[in-house]
Image 1 (cartoon, rainbow, N blue to C red):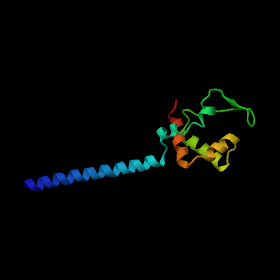
Image 2: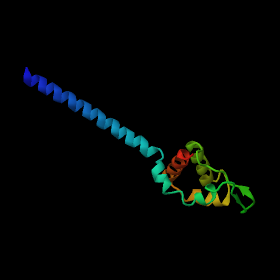
Image 3: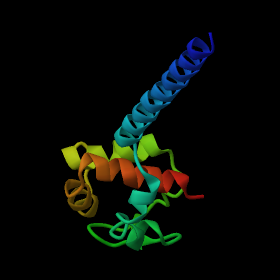
Length: 117
């Protein structure tokens, strides 16, 4: 009886550990699909020169008030960057910047800016 109880406890513990491992792997896969704000912080050097200055206006190709994007919805930022990358939206600077970004870069940058206030 004692051996049976020990085996059942170990089997139960093994089942719990396996389910936790599976949940951890699923969480890691979800994180890989989304953006990583920490990684995004290292990718925004080309963004902060315009988007990090309050009331900044650019004069190329025309006078344009650059929007502050800190705190903006991540999905909105992703959609905007993808639209610039595909040519659906156009601004010479943004076309060049977005065109140089991978899908993961875009997700990371969007996550970074969405977490700023």
